[in-house]
Length: 206
Image 1 (cartoon, rainbow, N blue to C red):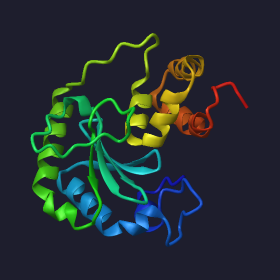
Image 2: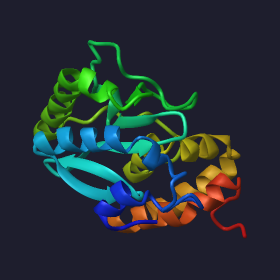
Image 3: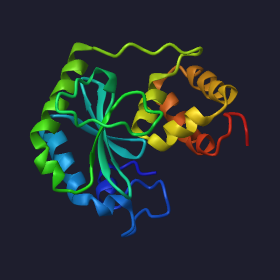
Image 4: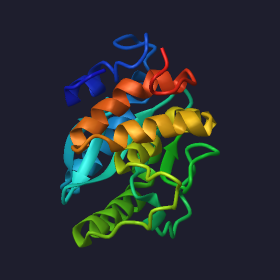
């Protein structure tokens, strides 16, 4: 997976065999992705690579992340439970996603059409970050690390695969992640576990 932000906009995310080829999903929507990047940077958001995708931060919090698929590209919001969505533009990434959290685009010129809405929603999300406001955590038998919640919100394939695991396999990951003291360690473990989760395996299975 990529670690340099510029690679995403020139080669792709590095997660599949289409990386650095004309068939990469980022190539299909590069004009729209660049337009979203410009908006996020204009809004003063800090740009970093997380989960091999451009992630935009403010006040030390993840605000939004870009994603590209064969059929569309997306701007997904973290802490989506807080978003009011007055324009009704937010959609769910998958049937297991808890809250509508993304603006989906099926044509690159739609970014310009929604420019004022995108900026308003980013401004709303920045306000929550500045105020330190977070959504109430949903009760689970074992606390789900915030890093895993963020990863699943940004990665619908991961979210659906995790929710499809047996309760025992889910717990194996939660125990493992909760055992890490540092956020950076939990993020690294999630990236390492992704293929296992997609394969339907538990943390200790081979």
